Image 1 (cartoon, one colour):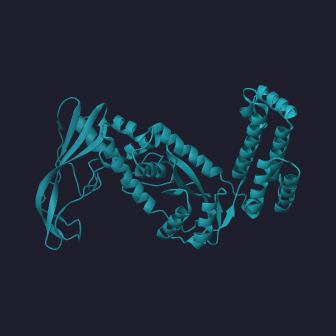
Image 2 (tube, rainbow, N blue to C red):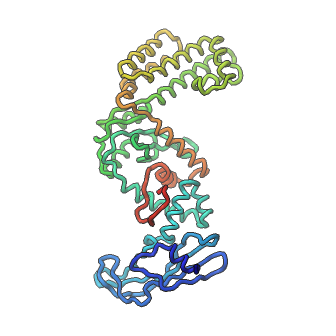
Image 3 (cartoon, rainbow, N blue to C red):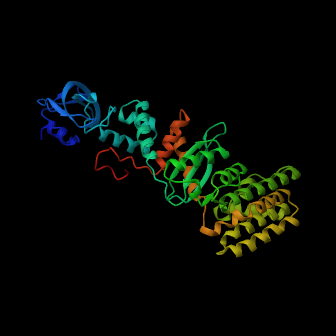
Length: 413
């Protein structure tokens, strides 16, 4: 087959355009495909109003296309500009590229696919373009797809903070607990983040009153924000956050024992943390030995394991009875960190038990956080907040950027 015919079949040319001629130009490392578009035509429809208008002039435009084997390929065409009596002079849109873009639609589809799998800088290097151009491309499709999302059926939301960069720079994530998609990302970790999300709900065909359940940690700022801006939502504090606090309480007891005894044996910290199922045989033996040697550690670990049993019950009533037994330890445990945590549990009693209403957990949010941190680590950080938000929406937002892109697309789209 003639190479020119190969190019003609690879390009997504649609009516009213036809390829009248094509040729290779340039050096061996760069192939240039020149397309003559309706060379004999003198009148075209105005791209604004559709009226038949004369062609004012033709201007050369260039678009980067998918590589032809190992060669960088560029599409060149003289695009007409119509002179409409109503709308003035406007450039006619071509079917293989979006207005204002220097890439063909097939090239943009491939670029977006690469960004899902690697850092933007690496994808840009692979494609042979500057990363700033790739960021502009990504920003365009992500912003368009996110603005078109419909949240009218959104009922259950999870919120949590995650680190954006070093230096305690945090952002707050809002996640759809039913689909697992990232809904909204905003800077900060206070009540203002919930206010910003409530405003975003209105922009996506929903209302703050439509949210019936919010899974979150026990942050006073988040609690205040939800109470003020999501008035109909029940606050749910799931097992992950409660047991994380219990782990911190046990760690405080370990530090207290270490101060009293002048230190503990090597590896004690890791042996006393986590579940028994995840520990090695040596760590399990060390845990048992430490608990027998130091009664405070034994009591603290027994209390934490007893607390974990609260989520094994099938009904709210049985779980509440178990939590009452957990709380009763407060009067006789003689461990200050455990006493403080028991008081915290009592203040959040209803939110903890609301887990049994729908089995709501924050597992989706924790999985999302790990994906965002992996993307940040893979890119070795992002230049600014806007780039981090863009990549977060792209890899975790469940976006569909196929609007305006050629069909068929890779299955990932």
